[in-house]
Image (tube, rainbow, N blue to C red; front, side, top):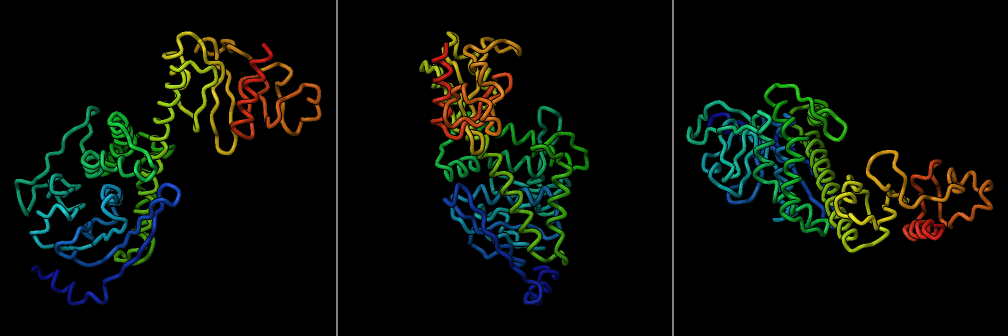
Length: 369
């Protein structure tokens, strides 16, 4: 036992501070309870450990968030220990996930680090940081995402009653590694990342996580760190959930096209739906694409060709163009379908209050031909 550890334990009643939070995933179907504990981990119990010196680093915050998401299939309570020193035997215990521990790294034993200098504990575990195709090195976040991506996506999918296919996991790995982990790794090594994360530059994300984690006074306090981890967990869950649902909706869209439906409908907007039509609807059967956008449903015309400016296969009647609820009195004689909220002034798209109203709108359009 090292002197620093002896002194810290002798004063543990003064230093130990805990805080808890609960994260809900999948409309109250799963709640995660996270507790930060400023003490050494208990031997033999599954836990997550992080060195206190590195606790406010944004890459470590995201690494801890990944740790939580990768083990949430084993339970919904997580103890994250902030410890300056731990016993050597804990390094070889795969039940204990170690984050930000110098250069001691072995992903097969759940040990992940953010530095590249020679290990002072076991030289054979000095990490060799592989490089991505774009030339950037894998740091803490990239290495952890690479090791636990499949499990994290499966865990989030299970909370949403989805079972991701292997190609979905592969696509999510590449997407999130490029958009988030790659940039955080570059920021970790002092480089300026120029990529965007959901509209934010990653240095901004790093700054926000750092400010949250250190914005509660004494560095040993757990509240700020807990809020930062919660922010990172929610961000990752949101991105994975949105992208998974889009992939499932795209599969559903393609299936409807291949089955020969003239109206195709998905619960959420599918990016690239026009390309899907171009690829799978070779006979030009599909006339309208319907999808939910927040609380309304959109009925989108389908162009005869994918290029901009081409005419729709079946247009919205011109006398309906420009309709809004505020102008309803001006369209009394137009016989606009019930439940219509808005019609684009050039007849490209219409908004309806429900799925059935959108279906009625599309069918009325087809009846006009």
